[in-house]
Length: 318
DNA sequence: AAGACGAAAGTGGTTGA
DNA sequence: TCAACAACTTTCGTCTT
Image (cartoon, rainbow, N blue to C red; front, side):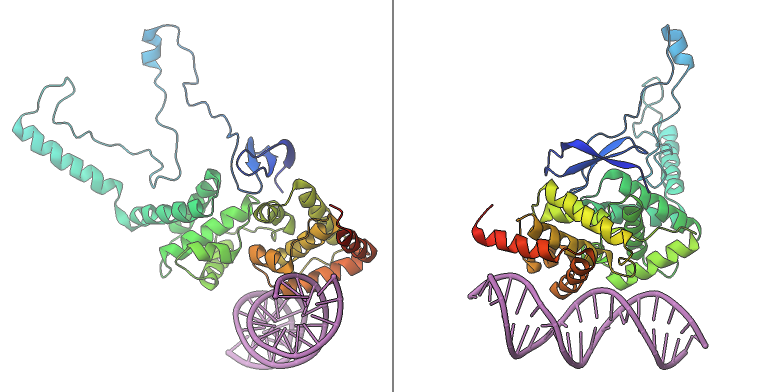
């Protein structure tokens, strides 16, 4: 579990809760995924020069690594200008030579099935991640997972899209900003079944193991979609934590648990939403919400409180 | 009329022989 | 590989607000 902690500030975009992720030094909005304070990476030189001569001797070594570029942004480009280093035009012979050099450079850079593959895949990851409003670091993790998959020749026989989608799904879970398989499948060209199957393969082959998604991770985002305040979020989280503690949460779908916790929280706090509304955003059916919440209310002994809450609602008190 | 309820049958995925 | 199984969905008729 990453060390995350609630912040006092609100998300400027959606007023959702902000979490501080100390491992990354960032503020993250739990509802919309906005990254408020990216870790301050010092892109300047990591040394001080006392005169220009010294500055020249200590060149900063290259551009920052960007995992979203297929070659991590580290390869060389040959400039296109037909001039030499001092700026004068090149003779015809040299010019054609340079042209061939450039040609080769390009070919080498995007050479081989793997590099070409990664370019397409990263494009796909970027596209889907953008539609799901995921922060940059999730994309980067997905790109890294994809790269590892490619290096082990696991893409053969599988579509780029399915592996890209599965990588993104895994990256979301790793970063506690889970998206359901359905949500990813909706933006991907691949169906849920395939993504799920590929995801399981990745886990097995890359020897990764992610703990099952906690329903709590879904709460901020779902509550945001339902335009519920933080008080309701906290209540829902508290309910889930009690349920987890009493161990009747295992084997149940995390989205179903999250959905019914939200349902209970909204009625207890007089901000009622219909089962239909909650079912819509959480991607489970009303029936599941009913079953889950009946179960939870029973085991947590919340019957009187629920009845009372409904009664208060009648009075018109809000 | 809309929402909540629950029974019954169907679906897809996991597990264990 | 197959069957058993639990969770979840679909569908639909009924009750409550």
